[in-house]
Image (cartoon, rainbow, N blue to C red; front, side):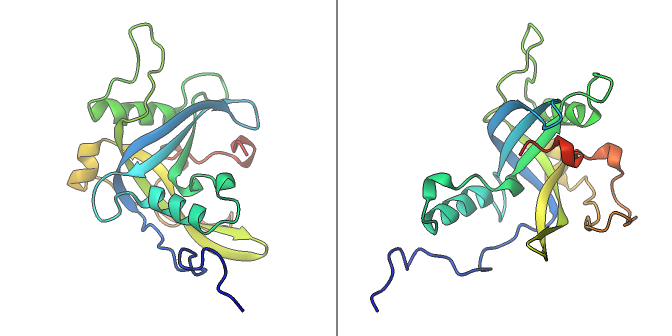
Length: 194
């Protein structure tokens, strides 16, 4: 048997690192205005950790996945590094989570709105992000992933002025402590864009 192509660059299953729950300073690497499956306006924000031990985490994971894929152009940016933020509530007013995102950017020194009240392109800006662990299921097996859950100013993250919410279990009856639903941007299943 000859050595398969790309053997040296192929990762061993389960060998990649998981991001621990916590607060991180992140750059916005891409922002897209889109709609949820339910047709609600939403931002899709790709994040990259820019400081500390995990700097470059999502970009590195993305490159590793591309290197080990037979179809590298089909590999998408890690979903764990993407925040989905509804901009309006059910009544068409500003969603609290969107306001929290904008406020965190403003408190970090960034201009969110243009002079004519249009959303600026936020790509390249830096913001504080809190990530929590969430249990997920695929093909009958459960596993843990870490997802962006809330935004804070860069300064609050750097000073440790935040609380990491409890793990989110698949069990819908779980009643752990941590952030309540009004402080997170957890979307209903119908609001996830894909």
